[in-house]
Length: 546
Image (cartoon, rainbow, N blue to C red; front, side):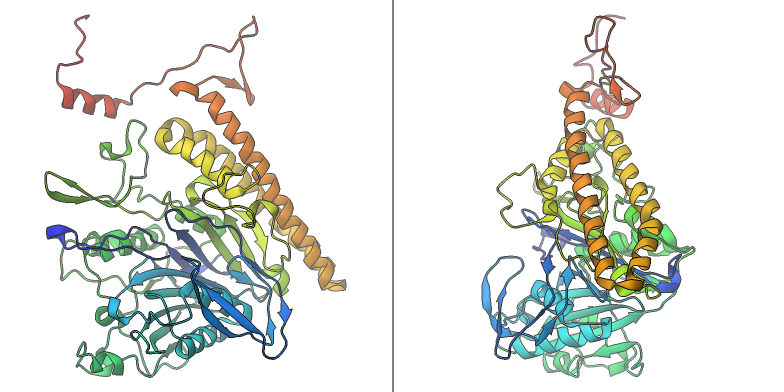
């Protein structure tokens, strides 16, 4: 998603108001041999559901209209491919998955006359690619042919065998050219990006694992931005150097992910904190200290820097009920001085989030699963969406719904309804949400083998039957989740009405022997908040009664 940036007074900090996060796992770094990646599509005011582009064949001369994914502005049209593949969400029928985060970079490099924006690039490539390498070729060819009408982007491009990270920027208005580099992530490694360019030096001789545009160094030389040897060229440092905001608000999220699953990340705390200009940057990838699964990535996408130097639980910013979220914008002023909030992986402005699981040893219709949620990862359950799905679950449909129209039949709106009840009273109410969320997540993961075993048997006789079975399952689980979330919303308003807590027993609210509601609990302030209140107010509220 796009970012907003400005120079913040003496800090000279870049503030990323709209930002996304991608996490990546190589197949030998996962427990079962899956390639996995994640995406949190974060953007204030964004209404998103589950995208769907059915497989199709197109007659010669068919044109495709291009509308900007962020603004819906019409950019132009390009020739349609003769054949396009089924795409649901950000995965296609061949298990190719593409995500992104925007880093912006040098503003003068945006090709404002270009036709292709980053969102269109993703979904066109998914419709035209059977592998990650093919997707990279499609994306770079499109951008070089029609112009790239977006700021600098980092893309995650994965298939069941390989995980790649690619960075791309235009070459200025009217250029119809881009600079780009793509690097394969080692199979035994994990990687991440979060709105800051991550590729520095790359081995131009490693044709098996590195791809790049012919002009990637030449263009920088022509602008006077680089004069060293080709081998010393750093894409990040030349085109999108990390300032304070790029480190503290962006790369700190990468640091947090690496810190969860690898050793020795303490040495990069100063870099992630933006403290020292000469602090050592983090590597592009690390080798994890254990193998990861889907549940690990779901948990990582719910991170708020817990247990790290960036944790959000040590001050009053979270309010009375210790909300691990902060109001935006990230920057604020007090008495003319600039201050900032932390920006963790989990954030309230998420439009959707997913964990993509791609498995080479299964039939392609069964191997690809997009574990999908339609809000902040911390506040939703991830329902399974199989890559062969040909019908979008009604609750994930965008048609007839938007950011200004609430609907009880739409997952985005029902999940946001629940989230926005919980946010301001987090420590009071989150436990109830988490119980439902984790129960649903566990049920989906526990059922996966049984569902897929049945799909494999059906596939042996008919791939169409397997596809229809998994499509029905995808729709059933999504709609069951929506029904459970509606019940959760009602439960929350009853249980926590007026900042109290009504007692329950065996899942039911308790009553007196006369049929009325049982005595409620009034939790009041936490000890930490009470002490801070007394510190700030002195004896103003001190009671004369001993």
